[in-house]
Length: 500
Image (cartoon, rainbow, N blue to C red; front, side, top):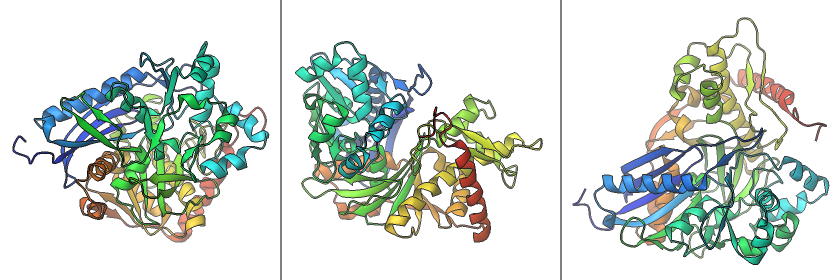
């Protein structure tokens, strides 16, 4: 690689929920090197999900170092982009850079009762108008308040300005710049429930409602903007592209025009649809910022957040022992032509869009003596597809019909899942040659921020690998979906002491 033109590579740091990755891309969008390390989560109580912030940082730096070593020299890297798991909340000491507690992961539901009380107080319509999102434990605001209330002395220290809050991007930027920059981008800020996505600034009323001191918040910058320079990898390299992982994937899929949509099948599944310069909100789906390029106006998106997708497959593997690896689900599910009337509602962390029910719990209905492991596997893949339709139906009610769905993430390699998805939606499902679109989107933002990639050139970096056409009779599609909706009613509000 030593003969590659100088400054022609882009380093993408893709910090996800279950792993850290680093990929080096050429300006043609092709992957030159990659590295990945697994990341552990802990579950100290039911509904609690935590990670070690130090491990998040160490694995990401380790991956980047490995990927850069594979291409020979960091000297060719023009810029660094970051994509990150969103909403995960870290509070640390400004003086030492040490976290005051484990990171509270986006899946964590410990603040469900706090959110319910806030909704009962009647503040949700105002919060939704300012932020685009409903009051839910998923977002960062109540997580921050929980840490300030439960770590001794934390609230007083935060008010004094001794503590810093950040989502994972801010945590990485802080340490990569050796404490020089405390910043986030508009997409990550829009997931905190503290940021006004119309005025693009921290909102005083939201800070009051959620009891978060302004002194601990990062500066908010455009997604393609300057986030400091790092010397961690040798030399000085600018960090000039930052976005939450789902927004990065929307860009990596080159969904650059209103109505274009993608679904990322990761731990959860996240459907985003570009709505251009217009902020739209739907019934059960959230309005969010897709990206902001330098000083231009932000581009918005509709988002449907599905908390459990790949995590349901992991549960079949680790919880039930039905499969040895996640890839085994496809041949197992393919042994049967359908799920045999089984419906699995994978509400293992509540239900996200469009239900927003933190009290929902995982449910299987339709079990008989004839039910086999293959039926459960097939029902799991169908559940991921049905949950995707739940979100897309809520979006298209606001923004019009979907023409095709571009897909990425780990489970997008599963051909059976994508055929089921096309059948459930009734529209083509398209997989690109590069399914690491989250990292590609971070690299694109970095290339734009560094001035080495024009926005107009991004579609040239996307290539279709396979298209899955719907093959299910429309009447049968609607019959199965109606049964799915009936199954969902069984899972709703299960853990609530009284129906919410």
